[in-house]
Each structure stands twice: as C-alpha cells, then as structure tokens.
Amino acid sequence: MIGRAAALLVDLPVETTATGWRLAERRGRDLGRATGLLEADLDTLEAAASGYAGTFKIQLCGPWTLAASLALTHSMEPAISDAGAVADLAASLAEGAAAHAADVRRRLPGAEVVVQFDEPALPGALAGAVPTASGLRRVPAVDEPVAADRLRQVLEAPRAPAVIHCCAADVPWSVIASSGARGVSFDLALVRRADEDAIGELAEAGHGVLIGAVPAKEDPVRRATDRNQGDGRRVRPRGAQDFATDVIRLWDRIGLTLAGLSGQVVITPACGLAGVSPARARAALAQCQEVARLIPEMIEEGVR
Image (tube, rainbow, N blue to C red; front, side):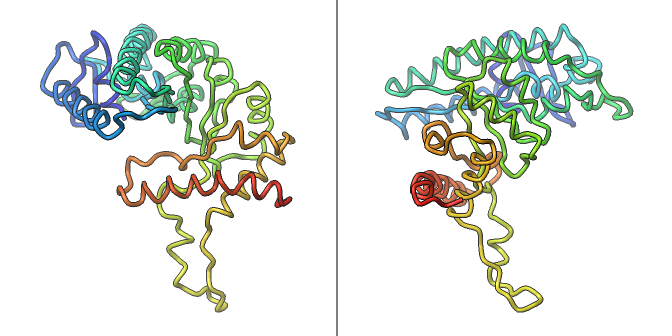
C-alpha cells in the first residue's frame, strides 16, 4: 500500500530501505520498479474491464498513513514528525491521485470512478502514538483540524467521490466528517456502542456507509465446522444471513429507518483482500453480494 501510493507522488522520489520506504534525493531503481508494476496492473485492468460501465472504486493510501510510514531522507524519522514534509507529501499525493484517477477514467471511459483512501494509521497520528525511528518516543499528536485539512486537500484533487477507509479501532469519525469525504468505510467487528451515534450522524448527513461485514479471511468459526465442541455440539458456521443480521441490528440500534439501509449502505469485506488468495477474494465478494441481496428481504420479513 505504501509503495503503490509512493509511486504516484509527484516530484518526491522514494526508495526502499531495510525497514521500509523513505523519501529519496533522486529517482532510482526502486521507484522505477514500483511505477512499472502499477502501469502493468493498469494495463491488465484495462483489458479485463474493457467496456465496463458503472461505479468503479480505486484505492490509495491516505496522506496521514503515508506520512506515518515514509521515512525522511536523512534522519529516518517518520515524515509525520516534520510539518513541512507532511505539507509537501499531501500536495504531492493530491497531484498524483488526480493523475491516477484521470488515467483510470481514460482507460475505462464508461466508469464512474470512486476513490477510497486507506487511513489505518490516522487514529494513531491523532493520539500521538506513531513511534519515532528509535521506537523510544512517540511523534506528537496531530491536531484534528490539521488532519481534516490535509485530508480534504487530497480528497478533493481527483474530482471524484472520495471515501475514507479506517480498519483500526477508534475511528476518528469527526475528522472524517470534516474532511469532505462522501463516505466512510469501517470494519463492523471493531465498532463499539460508543461509535454508533457518530455513524448515525454521518449517515443522517448523507454520507455513504461502507460496512466491512464479511471477513476478508476465512471465518475461524467456519474452519471449526468439522470439529465438535467439548459438550458434543457441532459449531455452526456463520454465513451471509448472519452477516446481514449484524448489519440490520447495527442500523436498528442507531435508530435510522431500515427502509433506507439498502440505498445508503454498501457491504464490503472487512479490511481488505490484498493478503488473501484469488479464490478467497472471489468467495468474499460473492458473499458480500449475497448479504446485500438478503438485507431488504430480511427487513421486509421483520428479521432483527
């Protein structure tokens, strides 16, 4: 995720080190390889989705996670520790994201592009939990207005509906609401009761709600299906109906009209699919479709 977004940075070359990516003085082999891999993926995308018409989501690392993960050129401290570096990164990422979205539109002229920015490190940045290079200290917390402003700068650049995805605990709902994002994506398993009012406020304000209801990796309960519990009872695997029930119950607790759930909520895998096999990715996406199909039927039947 870091290398892919770094390959899009404009006038900010990067390189790899033993510990990850860092800003570099000049363009080198690492950046060339990352750029080449991205171009190859886009060529494959163009061939596979030729003629596609409809909503098409692309995703990139967000500015705060990128700043927390990229090291500075000489000190090896995270870029987030330098306000000037963060400003440069945000401006560069905004320009790169705009060019990337335009490239996808050129290759898929019938698609309506949606850009998702992944920000798993945003809660840590706001809490002052990002470690320094030595690991002995923490970078000072980022102020919420500053965090929202940098996000807005990047989100507005692609001129497309933008979603912020945060699969960490303590999702900063207020920052996301202030950033201009059109939607928020989160892992349902990490949602606490204290988060539900904030989700409701975002939904009432018209934001799209992308709920990570289906495990990206195989559900551990599903793997236990063939084993009996100690008392002899067989474990029942969780399926699409269970995940649909989870979503309906969340919406019901928030106090929003269930009739509007289908039009505002998108069912997604929890977190992401980058670390799973193609077969598991297909299965997870098929299950997301099944959950989305079941929800209106279950609401009509009065299932809670």
